[in-house]
Image (cartoon, rainbow, N blue to C red; front, side, top):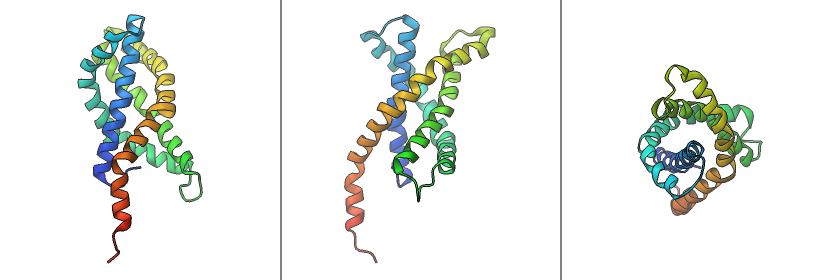
Length: 163
């Protein structure tokens, strides 16, 4: 897990890319009724708008709320660290899915006067995918990549003599 602000930024960028790109692909596939190669290319157009939106929401708001909430659910000093990761991930999805679905509804769906019903439907369709994608695939993958990138820094820090 991130130990510095720089590491938090990198972790958030990685998580945003993996989560947002997958969710955009999922929503495009739902809209066109199939998943094919064109979906993966089309997703990059929406990613330009949705990734910065997700980064700002997660880094400045949701990440802090998710950690505070998770620390109320799981005591880090007594609990299993895996349970803390699951709690943070679950709370993050509980906040990010409705917020990002709202942004997508405004930006990419022609909701008109049906903004709230279209948004609620979008959340209902996105939540199961976002939850399981985060818990089962995106979270473990991003944490693995993060550990690969920053494992050398941890080893160097541990090897430094204390002053």
